[in-house]
Image (cartoon, rainbow, N blue to C red; front, side, top):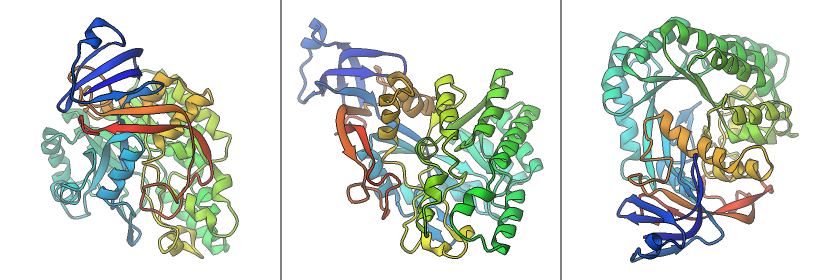
Amino acid sequence: TVIRNGLVITAADEIAADVLVDGEAVVALAATGSAVAQGWNAATIIDASGMYVVPGGVDAHTHMEMPFGGTYAADTFETGTRAAAWGGTTTIVDFAIQQVGGSLREGLDAWHAKADGNCAIDYAFHMIMADVNEGSVKEMEALVGEGVTSFKLFMAYPGVFYSDDGKILRALQKGAETGGLVMMHAENGIAIDVLVEQALAKGHTDPRYHGEVRHALLEAEATHRAIKLAQVAGAPIYIVHLSAAQALAQVSAARDEGYNAFAETCPQYLFLSTDDLGTPGFEGAKYVCSTPLRPAEHQAALWRGLRTDDLSIVSTDHCPFCFKGQKEMGIGDFSKIPNGLPGVETRMDLLHQGVVEGHISRKRWIEIACATPARMFGLYPRKGTITPGADADIVLYDPNTTQVHSAATHHMAVDYSCYEGRETTGKVHTVLSRGRV
């Protein structure tokens, strides 16, 4: 296959080049119109005139079929990866979950079984450690040997996923020893539970209170604590779904001091706010996720963090629950609303809108959506770039077409869109996953 006449954009370059694909891999790039490019013969010619040719997106934070609060995320690996492909994402890194009392291996095997043979695109796994003990810490080493590069712990959700500081420290020490990166859900879950109890006692049951009890300062405090524990262990740390300016300040300070503190944010924190969470009636439940949406003024700080590289990656935390029947479990008690939003299909487009609006450059778009997530989790340069030897995960992106987001047209298995009626500029035109359209 030859892809002709496009503008190839990677994290490093923007070049008018043709791309030669053989089998599943990129074999060469040559300047459009050059003798080398003209000399290429291929069975399939794809014309990318007027389009960007970019690496397939790498979404490093998804939860397909995830159990939560007595229900399951609405997208299966089949529907979720299909939606990802429609949105220009060609690799997801999902989370395998260890059950309390169970081994990491059992959790990983269970998630492999869910995904095997059902995915439209490539996938990898992080490992959620719900039960940090001598056995599971020992198991980290074996999993690293099999290509699980990352382990997620929670400072939130006491009684479900919560780990105390001692457990976190042990996991970080093992991470330092084995090269496994510890990812942290940084919110002070113990304090949040007290605030939840107090809010419900006062009759504050609407979705908007979800944002109030999960206070930005409790995200900042936990982020600070996670970073300090990592420093004690001599380990890097990766903060997931960072949403608050105060938490970002903790990451920035650590990075300024030369520590390997990394963080991701998500499109919902860049484009949505507590105004959405506070939608009258129960509609706000559509926007319940953790960490929660913040007041709109946090958005400018997050965009700035993406420009300065204090925020390294934009992932989705895609964990969709239907409004009917799932989100509705929390009518009369916001704490029973399943936490999570759909996003795997819209990330590349929303970040391109960030380019259109002048928040980030085109190269930075590819860096935060493709290259850095691939680097962070051991997938680069097979994923996240267009270079000889890389997998031919390539997206032809039309930067000028506008689209209106709607549940009626998206491919995610969820009955609403967080961006219903919103118009954005730019749209995926053609997607290749390892050379196949």
